[in-house]
Image (tube, rainbow, N blue to C red; front, side, top):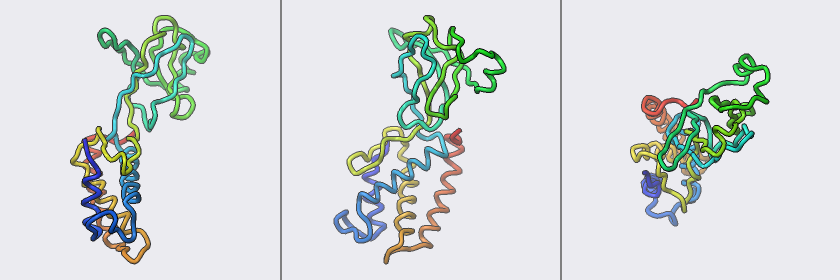
Length: 212
């Protein structure tokens, strides 16, 4: 868990102010917007914010389901039950081309779903075959890389983020603040912290992997 309100305080100090009310060229809201940009940048590039969603119930004859909120990339899909004992079976990932080669009537085929794909962009998870009574009523479990909740003054805690990454948010915020055109702009400082972020991103990729 990381509390970015602490990081904002550090950023304000580096911007030569002792309190939000004393900020001259920026507002505290803008500083949190920089942090939100950093979170989205990390999500698009790496598997840092990975979650598992089991809130979708599979319906008889319904093959397509919306991906969870904030979804960027799917990592794993399974179907099963959570009660009384969690019991899930992994589905095979596939593509439209692969299914067309396997089954000329794949769009209308029904049976025990054992495959998943994104057939219309990335915002829908489709099951193949279309669910019959063997999987109807079970949960669709999706492990995905996704955006965390928007970072604001009122929502500054990211439960899924290791505190060690707070330096990345601090450097991103400092770079963006000093990059902004104003009397307090420092392009050389912004460029310096851009390079620091690139070094951290190399480590992040080694630990969490690149987003698909």
